Length: 145
Image (tube, rainbow, N blue to C red; front, side, top):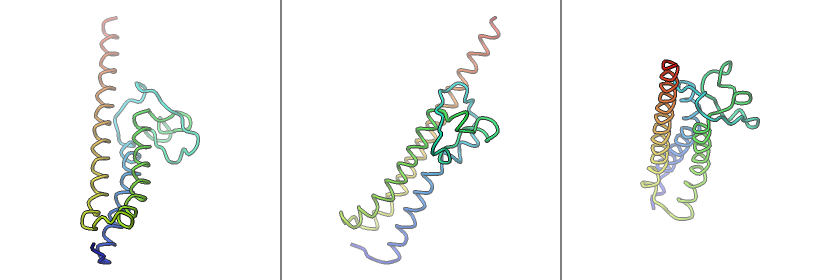
C-alpha cells in the first residue's frame, strides 16, 4: 500500500476536483443549452432552489421557483449531487477500510466524472432531438392547416 504524502494529496485533489465537476457540470451547461423547455414537463423547486438551475436566464425560463426545471435536467442535477456525495464518502472508505492502493484510487474520481459527463451529453442530445422533433411537428401541423 502506497502511503506517499504526495500521492495522498493527488488523490484528495482529484476527488475534490471530480466532486466539484459532477456537482456543477449540469447547472453550468444548462445556461447555454438550446432546448425549448415548453416541450417538457417541469418541476418547480421551492427549496433548495439555489441548487437547481433552469434553462435560460433568471428573467426568462431559468427561474426554478416560478417556471421550474425540465424533468431530464432535474434528474441530471440530482444525479450530479449524488455522485458528489458518493465520491466524497467512497474515496476515504475505499482507502482506509478496504485498502485500495492509491495508484488505482486516483483513477476512480476521474472515471466517475467521465461517466457523469457522458450521461449528461447523451441526455442533453436526446432532449435537443426531442424538442426539435416536437417543434418540427408543430410547424408541419401549422402549415397543413
